[in-house]
Image (tube, rainbow, N blue to C red; front, side, top):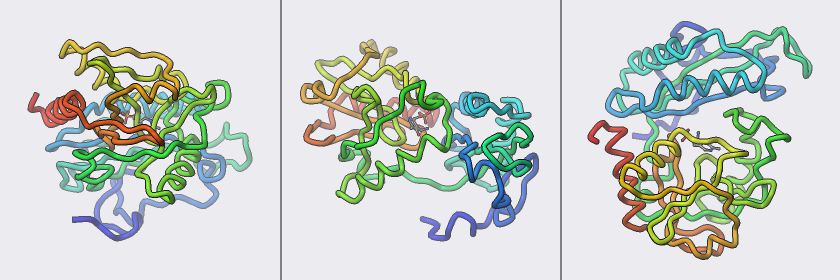
Length: 293
Ligand code: PMP
């Protein structure tokens, strides 16, 4: 059942700076540095049958994302892991999306933030298939975004930082306005990069090709799927991919903790089939996450 209430008006518990607080009381002040200057980083992971998939990888990435923005979290990977597990249990959920977020507080206003304190919260909620159940079979339709992933010297591109989602939201809205499910983004050089919240994979003649993650997130799902493919003996090539090549790929899928493995049926003018290899990797990922593998 979908909860239609806004995200600040729900029952349950949110972990905030070390303790569980009632959902509606997990608030921050309007003069929080994060709100004004995007000094915020977050994670997103899924719990399958009570176990949070790749939990420590996500906790480690949260700490690293904060570090890349110049602030250190006082919680260790083990403590973040434990807090996520505690929040899931407190909300009596087994299959859920888990959202840790960390940010700079309200001790200082202005661009400088040396005196701000780091904060962290963890919320969990039910979140079904990212693009809806049906799209897992039929594939999503992607627009081509006009925004481009920035160069590594333009933004801290390997941080899962809130500020980097500004162009993702704009691209997603532009895509939705034209009837698409999401958008494929190119990078500052014009190379194929990723979707607004998921990494991209292409298949041609039984070989998988995926862009080198040198200016966007090297997703945890991405790495998992590369490993699953290689274990099946399928070659995976990480390299620069140019838009001209999209014409020649037979299959296309995206990966992410929320998106899992979702086939793509079209991207701009290019069409793709939802093929056997995509379906196999989708199943392999689902089996692994659900510990059936
Ligand atoms: N790129 C972006 C922009 C994302 O938001 C995500 C989702 N975190 C990914 C890629 C995929 O990362 P992961 O597989 O670690 O969830």
